[in-house]
Image 1 (cartoon, rainbow, N blue to C red):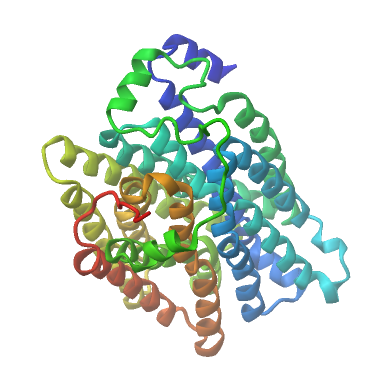
Image 2 (cartoon, one colour):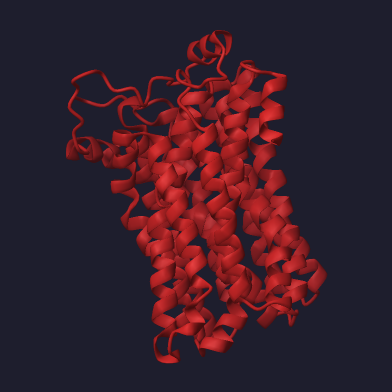
Length: 443
């Protein structure tokens, strides 16, 4: 197998990069499964007779469940460990993606609610994924590499759109929208097997060398995160710990900043392809190709933002400066999405969207910041709280844009809403967060 060969060539030297590769691949599928409905949305709405407002609610169904399961999901991660919880998460989100392909078999009167339920269960199943990614990176990577590692797995969302938008657009055009869901679900089932085979804790991994283990441990990796002491009683989430998170100014700035950053993400994951069809008159096949352009730029921005941030640390800048500079610059670039309202040129619109998505990717360093700041006793739960705030946007953004488009018959106000969200994220990091450092809990 390719993975086996790659690892054997440098056995025990760079095992952490194999782990990162697997996280990247799984996260790519994670986001592709979220985006399936946005690509197939025009045909789904037509066949199931759904209005823009109805589609807004169906898009938001994922967010409701994803948000509700964040705290329980984070607690499950801290209790049972990343590998076990992620395995179940990956299997079930693949199952519910697969099942969306059969909604057309339901009587038309119930098809809309059936799609809502399937999207809800998809969000329910995917909830532990990003907190688990953050835990795995915190366990496997030293501080000076963590920004790059986090940026790489986070950039999978853009790579996913770039890779799968043309494929899913072609599947919708050639085979029908149902096959978008069945194909993606099948890919997820295969990945579940790979996850079980290759993911282990750093101290337990069969390919891990003592040299690499010592290197990441001395560099700040929390290698014993999932090791429970014999006889230790695992408690549920302590409310006073959560209260400390929610009253800490630094953490609140990071949490609200993630909400505003995710507003940009959820525009691209839900309404962007429909915007190109309805507002710019593109065909579904063309949209699949065009939508990949901003996604590729987002991917490039995501990787470069993490590399740039870590390079500042290696050059002696403080963690605060190294994280904030790319975030502020990125959000400033992302706000240029508003300029799309002032041109009729489709080519210029796509260029501006690509520019904005590059900026969003460059500044999307929320997960590295969480890996840097989360109390070591509750990295999973802190990541879950962070994800709760961030993914309120997965509910609000589709609904707000759905109502704006329905009432105003235009996407102009929607683009202003998204651009202003980028500026608000910048404000959070400039004026609320303060110094970036690991939070210490009061026992």
